[in-house]
Amino acid sequence: MKKLTIGLAIVAAVSFSGCANMNAQQRNTAIGAAVGGVAGSILTGGSSIGTVGGAAVGGVIGNQVKH
View 1 (cartoon, rainbow, N blue to C red):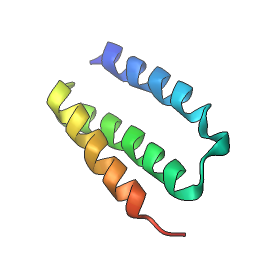
View 2: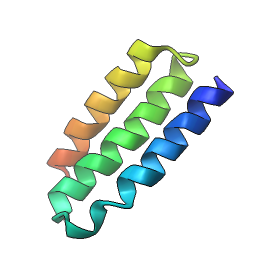
View 3: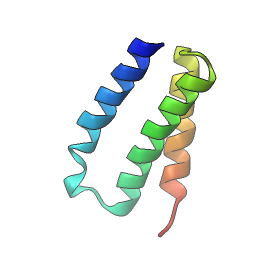
View 4: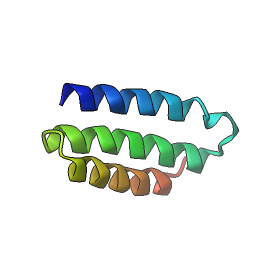
């Protein structure tokens, strides 16, 4: 689980480095997917399905957030 969490943190850091040209909705989607993936991983004990599911749900929620 520790390796998965570290891996997700690295992927999130690399992903966020490309956010400079994104609009607010795209940025919220990316952040939601990253947070959802980490949460899904933690809640399911490192399950791949939980991680992917969390990322999908987080991305949808992030996409719908309006400022």
